[in-house]
Length: 338
Ligand code: SAM
Ligand code: DTB
Ligand code: SF4
Image (tube, rainbow, N blue to C red; front, side):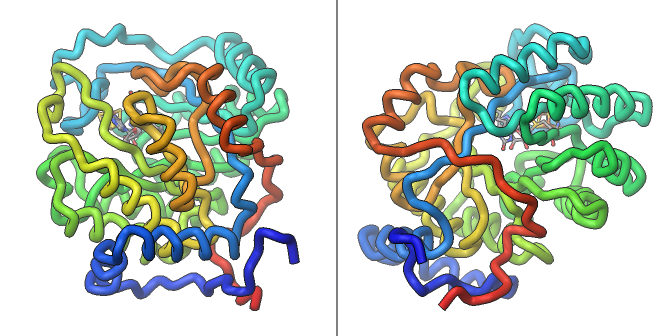
């Protein structure tokens, strides 16, 4: 057994209750972090981090009304809109991402749902990114079963589709679709055999009960997502959530730790929001079990720490990039490693 591993690998559970998750959140901070780190070490190399780079392949004018999002057509955020990027631009961006050390290339489109013709164009992009030797992830909004199958057949590794917040708080944040619509697309993605990247956003004025509800919904999916992005809201002027109260940074760390404990084998990504975090806060997030991040100066439309700053942070923490992953069926651990 590798040095970092303990014999406490947990079976994947899908029957978490609110009370159990609430109790984890309420642990003394040191106890919670210790448990999260034990769990992390039982399932992962604690000094290794998965690196993804993001590209917005179609920016702005999205018809949905997500209150956090600068790309919704409803909010005046001064965003420069862009039609679907030409294939060459995507290929060049993927090559640059690989050269600077990314393992996975994630593409995002500001659509409610793609049209079949758009799926044809996106499939060409997936093929170009694969040809560059990168893993592929894409987020396009809601999918039909047929579209999900076409993406899977094109070799797409991950589909990103976030639950974003608890079922109870969902209507406060988005009114143009329902939580169940998200669950339905996730089901199409699983059925098509792709890996699932699914997480949420904290710091949107939600209560701790909502953070419990989000993590419960994620952990109680039929299989744990292989990748769980935990985003801290990036406040963008013009969006309705711009003025919302800051979340306590230690509550953010707790959210990462509880995500780690509920979904032991998943990659938990310290996702949007790092630009406003200190190195020390990010280090605590890695200690709590985050083992993936977005690398590169831009997320989709907002900023991310400079690649140089991230290289320095990783060096200071002794973190090294993960190698590409062999295809695992899900983020679940089926057998106890004990
Ligand atoms: N339109 C597709 C969808 O919503 O599924 C894909 C693109 S959308 C921009 C992808 C994800 O970005 C959202 O689910 C949300 O979690 C995240 N996101 C958007 N704006 C954000 C913000 N201001 N802060 C943090 N995360 C954000
Ligand atoms: C995810 O959970 N976070 C990424 C990715 N999936 C697509 C997007 C973050 C977007 C932050 C706001 C922006 O840059 O527009
Ligand atoms: Fe559109 Fe996605 Fe932004 Fe919502 S989060 S407005 S669906 S781009």
